[in-house]
Length: 332
Ligand code: MG
Image 1 (cartoon, rainbow, N blue to C red):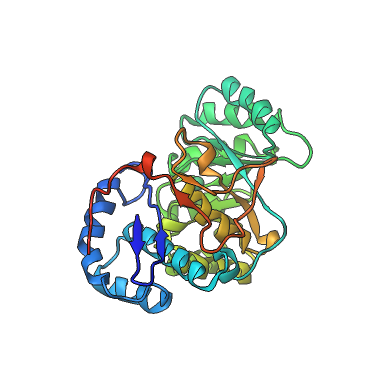
Image 2: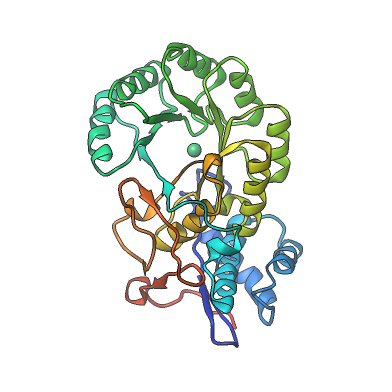
């Protein structure tokens, strides 16, 4: 999405739900939500990020994935207006670049293990296995991929809510001797907590953490060692930054990313990830290397399994209008 200002600056944001079945978010809902919320925002100052976030929450209950691209575009405008990259405004740049993970889609154990060498050749050392299928097969998947790892690699088995508790417990017992992180085994927080208490694997929560309330509850319950912060799940960079800073204070490491996206989302992720204290940043994602179409110039590009936020003002991207086409909605 694009926000034009009467000062001549233009900001961009992106929201890309991962289908309608992943989180309570869907692509057509973003467009409907923008149509609902957009008219209320005409005339507002996009550089007043805090007041604007509160205004959006008062004008439209919930729907954080609708507000996320608006908030990202406002950060883009704020950065351009003061000549600084968003990364600097989110807290400052830690180190030269950030470490990426590579997701390995759910296939047979052998096919998944065969992917590791190719991804390592691209520079990746963090691998996120998609599990959450049949428990016995998932145990074989984790073992097959773990056998391919080298010193310093990290392996995460992400069930994406796919297991019932009994299967999750069988899997974590079945890989008790493997150095693997277990991510979001079950659908609900309570189920995940139950599994967490029956394993000593490092534990990651993702889908059930969508705001400060759930984050603080999980921190108080010692329910996670790492949390996955997806920008649109929280409602934009403003709230994701709040969650990030809380986690940094609590000692909870983070994977910083979004549900999905292209070049604009990857740029927003890079600015938030790069302004996160390095020891607290477990991994992040270069979604623009998973997609087949480039939608913007200037987005971060993977280099040896790492990426860096742009040092240009704002997000540092220039959308490719010939790819994006004409707007489907115009609010003015
Ligand atoms: Mg996940």
